Length: 364
Image (cartoon, rainbow, N blue to C red; front, top):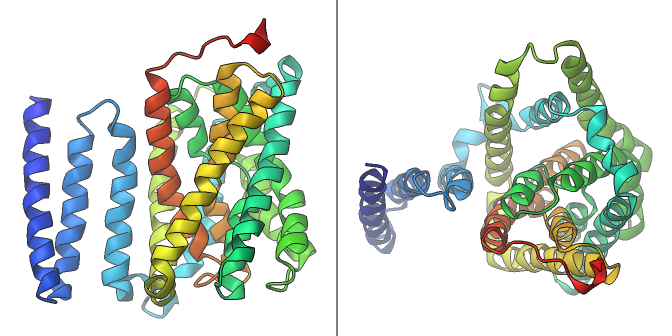
């Protein structure tokens, strides 16, 4: 039954794609955009029926939303005089609150049990990606604010989706949760300093203001979530069920608003920026994995660090860009990085899923 449904969705997606291409060739862009959105939605529904492709369905929905924002940005700039970019910070705070409700002090027990993996993971996160971002920004001809966005996504902490990918990749999930939690809580203090050092020549960086902005977006909501979890532990199952959906919807809204605001810049530099972001992301996986191997960590831990380093918190980076008043320029790299890292992360996790971690010689 599920296979029959998926076949229908795939068939419909194929028809929609062909019609979209026909309308595009005839420059009927007003209608073509809607068909492209419908194509992605049908593809996402088809993916839902497959075990390995299911994790990609949300990313495909993101592509549908971003496509709509590219073709019809007027829907996502302002409503009745209210600028929709004003929703970005509250949405990030809701997402961080959701992260807090799923956390407890026990999540940090891995610091005591396996401190080596935690230390290597955290240091790799805040060394590899910032340096890669700075290097890539330095060799491109992007205008300073867009180049600063590449540095910014590198200076962000681990992404929340990394925990899901670590689970699918048969990596060390406890280590993944711990690295994500620690890098997120350290971000208010480390990210602004790294930005000042690496991007200070590109844009003006107010370190103290950025620290406060990140504290508002991360520490306060997560703290509230932790308190909520402590007081209502076991009594708020509906929150546990609802927050992942709310978080995904929030991420989609953030990406759509940024895409609409930066549409003109994306049309000019889109392919080049995508290439730079892909290199940044893939080198994060590669160097993160080998940083674990260099220090003779178990294979499952190496996989974890690869995913943690390669997958950044694009939502937080977008929020920082918004607070800097540069959502249409500095916010572009995070907006591109978000969907692409989910595709690459899902692909890597699926490949590792069918290959059980083997004890390497270093574990003997």
